[in-house]
Length: 223
Image (tube, rainbow, N blue to C red; front, top):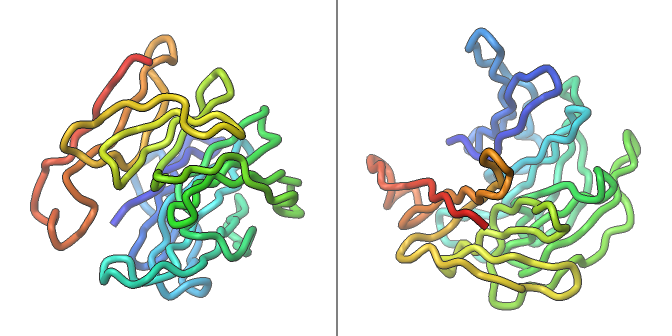
Protein backbone atom coordinates (compact mmCIF):
# COMPACT_ATOMS: atom_id res chain seq x y z
CA UNK A 1 0.00 0.00 0.00
CA UNK A 2 2.08 2.96 -1.22
CA UNK A 3 1.75 6.31 0.52
CA UNK A 4 4.29 9.13 0.67
CA UNK A 5 6.67 9.71 -2.24
CA UNK A 6 9.89 11.69 -2.45
CA UNK A 7 12.79 12.20 -4.83
CA UNK A 8 16.39 11.58 -3.80
CA UNK A 9 19.14 13.91 -5.08
CA UNK A 10 20.20 11.31 -7.66
CA UNK A 11 16.69 11.17 -9.15
CA UNK A 12 15.66 7.84 -7.65
CA UNK A 13 12.29 7.64 -5.89
CA UNK A 14 11.50 6.76 -2.28
CA UNK A 15 8.12 5.16 -1.61
CA UNK A 16 6.43 4.55 1.74
CA UNK A 17 5.06 1.02 2.01
CA UNK A 18 2.41 1.55 4.68
CA UNK A 19 1.48 -1.94 5.84
CA UNK A 20 4.89 -3.56 6.24
CA UNK A 21 6.41 -0.26 7.44
CA UNK A 22 9.25 -0.15 4.94
CA UNK A 23 10.74 2.64 2.88
CA UNK A 24 11.37 1.41 -0.67
CA UNK A 25 13.70 2.77 -3.34
CA UNK A 26 12.82 2.74 -7.03
CA UNK A 27 16.03 2.80 -9.10
CA UNK A 28 16.48 4.27 -12.57
CA UNK A 29 16.31 0.77 -14.10
CA UNK A 30 12.90 0.14 -12.51
CA UNK A 31 14.14 -2.21 -9.79
CA UNK A 32 12.67 -1.88 -6.30
CA UNK A 33 14.71 -2.39 -3.14
CA UNK A 34 14.43 -1.73 0.57
CA UNK A 35 15.88 1.63 1.65
CA UNK A 36 14.92 1.30 5.33
CA UNK A 37 12.96 -1.10 7.53
CA UNK A 38 10.92 1.03 9.96
CA UNK A 39 8.84 -1.78 11.47
CA UNK A 40 10.80 -1.63 14.72
CA UNK A 41 9.57 1.90 15.41
CA UNK A 42 5.81 1.28 15.32
CA UNK A 43 3.33 -1.64 15.20
CA UNK A 44 0.93 0.37 13.04
CA UNK A 45 1.01 1.87 9.56
CA UNK A 46 3.49 4.48 8.44
CA UNK A 47 2.07 7.14 6.18
CA UNK A 48 3.20 10.37 4.54
CA UNK A 49 6.77 11.48 3.86
CA UNK A 50 8.89 14.47 2.91
CA UNK A 51 12.38 14.16 1.40
CA UNK A 52 14.65 17.19 1.70
CA UNK A 53 17.32 18.30 -0.76
CA UNK A 54 20.01 16.24 0.98
CA UNK A 55 17.98 13.04 0.65
CA UNK A 56 16.93 12.93 4.29
CA UNK A 57 13.39 11.50 4.56
CA UNK A 58 10.85 12.39 7.26
CA UNK A 59 8.16 9.71 7.68
CA UNK A 60 5.05 9.96 9.84
CA UNK A 61 3.71 7.07 11.94
CA UNK A 62 -0.03 6.61 12.36
CA UNK A 63 0.17 5.42 15.98
CA UNK A 64 -3.03 3.36 16.17
CA UNK A 65 -5.20 0.92 14.18
CA UNK A 66 -6.63 3.44 11.72
CA UNK A 67 -8.59 0.99 9.58
CA UNK A 68 -10.30 -0.53 12.63
CA UNK A 69 -11.55 2.88 13.75
CA UNK A 70 -9.50 2.97 16.96
CA UNK A 71 -9.13 6.18 18.94
CA UNK A 72 -6.18 8.31 17.77
CA UNK A 73 -3.03 8.12 19.88
CA UNK A 74 0.19 10.16 19.73
CA UNK A 75 2.78 8.98 17.24
CA UNK A 76 6.36 9.62 16.16
CA UNK A 77 7.88 11.38 13.20
CA UNK A 78 10.85 9.37 11.92
CA UNK A 79 13.94 10.58 10.11
CA UNK A 80 15.70 8.31 7.62
CA UNK A 81 19.20 9.36 6.56
CA UNK A 82 20.30 8.99 2.91
CA UNK A 83 22.18 5.81 3.84
CA UNK A 84 19.05 4.20 5.33
CA UNK A 85 19.66 4.59 9.08
CA UNK A 86 16.57 5.76 10.97
CA UNK A 87 15.73 7.50 14.24
CA UNK A 88 12.83 9.29 15.93
CA UNK A 89 12.92 12.96 14.91
CA UNK A 90 9.94 14.12 17.00
CA UNK A 91 7.57 12.29 19.33
CA UNK A 92 4.01 12.65 20.61
CA UNK A 93 2.51 14.20 17.49
CA UNK A 94 -1.22 13.79 16.91
CA UNK A 95 -1.22 11.80 13.65
CA UNK A 96 1.72 13.39 11.79
CA UNK A 97 0.68 13.57 8.16
CA UNK A 98 1.58 15.85 5.23
CA UNK A 99 4.81 17.86 5.35
CA UNK A 100 6.38 20.80 3.54
CA UNK A 101 9.60 22.77 3.76
CA UNK A 102 9.47 26.58 3.79
CA UNK A 103 11.89 29.48 4.33
CA UNK A 104 14.46 27.91 1.99
CA UNK A 105 14.70 24.78 4.06
CA UNK A 106 14.89 26.53 7.43
CA UNK A 107 11.46 25.31 8.58
CA UNK A 108 9.77 21.91 8.31
CA UNK A 109 5.97 22.03 8.58
CA UNK A 110 4.06 18.96 9.73
CA UNK A 111 0.27 18.59 9.56
CA UNK A 112 -1.16 16.94 12.68
CA UNK A 113 -4.47 15.52 11.52
CA UNK A 114 -5.90 14.59 14.92
CA UNK A 115 -4.45 17.76 16.47
CA UNK A 116 -6.09 20.07 13.89
CA UNK A 117 -2.94 22.13 13.44
CA UNK A 118 0.28 22.58 11.52
CA UNK A 119 3.42 22.39 13.62
CA UNK A 120 6.80 23.80 12.67
CA UNK A 121 10.32 22.56 13.39
CA UNK A 122 13.79 23.89 12.64
CA UNK A 123 15.90 21.19 10.96
CA UNK A 124 19.49 21.24 12.21
CA UNK A 125 21.21 18.75 9.92
CA UNK A 126 22.37 15.50 11.46
CA UNK A 127 21.30 16.65 14.91
CA UNK A 128 17.59 16.42 14.10
CA UNK A 129 14.69 18.83 14.68
CA UNK A 130 14.38 21.62 17.22
CA UNK A 131 12.17 24.54 18.26
CA UNK A 132 8.83 22.78 17.96
CA UNK A 133 5.99 25.31 17.73
CA UNK A 134 2.48 25.80 16.39
CA UNK A 135 2.52 27.36 12.92
CA UNK A 136 -1.25 27.53 12.47
CA UNK A 137 -4.28 26.35 14.43
CA UNK A 138 -6.86 24.65 12.21
CA UNK A 139 -10.06 24.20 14.17
CA UNK A 140 -12.62 22.51 11.95
CA UNK A 141 -9.94 21.18 9.56
CA UNK A 142 -8.51 17.65 9.41
CA UNK A 143 -5.21 18.39 7.65
CA UNK A 144 -3.90 15.56 5.50
CA UNK A 145 -1.42 16.22 2.69
CA UNK A 146 0.01 19.74 2.41
CA UNK A 147 2.20 21.74 0.04
CA UNK A 148 3.89 25.13 0.17
CA UNK A 149 2.82 27.99 -2.12
CA UNK A 150 5.19 30.63 -3.48
CA UNK A 151 3.67 33.37 -1.30
CA UNK A 152 4.53 31.69 2.00
CA UNK A 153 1.10 30.17 2.57
CA UNK A 154 0.37 26.45 2.57
CA UNK A 155 -2.33 24.51 0.76
CA UNK A 156 -3.92 21.82 2.93
CA UNK A 157 -6.09 18.87 1.91
CA UNK A 158 -8.94 18.79 4.46
CA UNK A 159 -9.63 15.06 4.34
CA UNK A 160 -12.90 15.16 6.30
CA UNK A 161 -14.62 18.13 4.65
CA UNK A 162 -14.43 17.76 0.84
CA UNK A 163 -12.09 20.69 0.27
CA UNK A 164 -8.60 22.11 0.18
CA UNK A 165 -7.80 25.22 2.17
CA UNK A 166 -5.03 27.80 1.96
CA UNK A 167 -3.48 28.50 5.36
CA UNK A 168 -1.45 31.49 6.49
CA UNK A 169 0.95 31.33 9.42
CA UNK A 170 -0.75 32.46 12.61
CA UNK A 171 -4.05 33.25 10.85
CA UNK A 172 -5.33 29.86 9.80
CA UNK A 173 -7.62 29.38 6.80
CA UNK A 174 -7.72 32.29 4.35
CA UNK A 175 -9.25 30.52 1.31
CA UNK A 176 -11.01 27.28 0.48
CA UNK A 177 -11.80 25.31 -2.67
CA UNK A 178 -14.50 22.62 -2.66
CA UNK A 179 -13.83 19.17 -4.09
CA UNK A 180 -17.55 18.43 -4.36
CA UNK A 181 -18.56 14.94 -3.23
CA UNK A 182 -14.95 13.75 -3.01
CA UNK A 183 -12.58 13.86 -0.07
CA UNK A 184 -9.24 15.59 -0.69
CA UNK A 185 -6.26 13.62 0.62
CA UNK A 186 -3.18 15.43 -0.64
CA UNK A 187 -2.13 18.26 -2.94
CA UNK A 188 0.90 19.70 -4.70
CA UNK A 189 1.70 22.82 -6.69
CA UNK A 190 2.88 22.38 -10.29
CA UNK A 191 2.11 23.20 -13.90
CA UNK A 192 4.05 25.22 -16.45
CA UNK A 193 3.98 28.39 -14.31
CA UNK A 194 3.84 26.70 -10.93
CA UNK A 195 0.35 28.03 -10.23
CA UNK A 196 -1.70 24.86 -10.72
CA UNK A 197 -2.86 22.99 -7.63
CA UNK A 198 -3.13 19.22 -8.18
CA UNK A 199 -5.41 17.44 -5.69
CA UNK A 200 -5.71 13.69 -5.08
CA UNK A 201 -9.38 13.01 -4.29
CA UNK A 202 -11.55 9.95 -3.73
CA UNK A 203 -14.88 8.94 -2.15
CA UNK A 204 -13.11 7.39 0.86
CA UNK A 205 -9.70 6.34 2.20
CA UNK A 206 -10.94 3.07 3.71
CA UNK A 207 -9.34 -0.02 2.26
CA UNK A 208 -12.43 -2.19 2.77
CA UNK A 209 -14.55 0.28 0.77
CA UNK A 210 -12.15 1.09 -2.06
CA UNK A 211 -10.37 -2.19 -2.79
CA UNK A 212 -11.04 -3.19 -6.37
CA UNK A 213 -12.18 0.26 -7.47
CA UNK A 214 -10.48 2.88 -9.64
CA UNK A 215 -12.64 5.87 -8.73
CA UNK A 216 -9.94 8.16 -7.31
CA UNK A 217 -9.09 11.20 -9.41
CA UNK A 218 -6.52 13.97 -9.65
CA UNK A 219 -8.10 17.40 -9.87
CA UNK A 220 -6.22 20.37 -11.37
CA UNK A 221 -7.16 23.92 -10.38
CA UNK A 222 -5.35 27.15 -11.35
CA UNK A 223 -4.83 29.18 -8.18
